[in-house]
Length: 100
Image 1 (cartoon, rainbow, N blue to C red):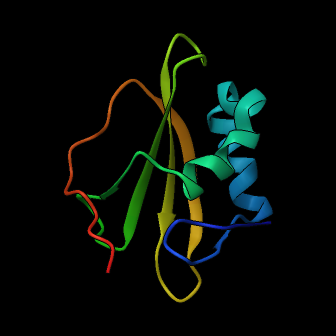
Image 2 (image 1 turned 90 degrees about the vertical axis):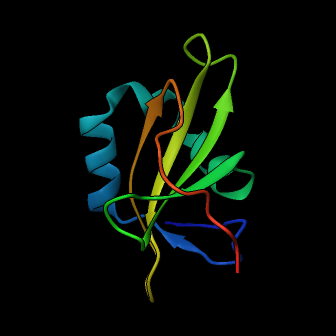
């Protein structure tokens, strides 16, 4: 599966990564279809503190679970693929991504 992104790149979601997301973050399953919106219209993109090639895409959904961010985590390289996705109450620390 491929996702379009605001960065003009497609992000690959492998079957293995989708299985990981649904196994480790089962509360996301009913909202999984929203992930495409996270990559196309994020409210903010941050660079991971542990890996400068990993970006965290944040989008807030007021009507999901009393108000949560869905975070899509992507490794940006020649392949550009989704690592994971999860809910968060807030944005993690890290530099805001400046699109080149």
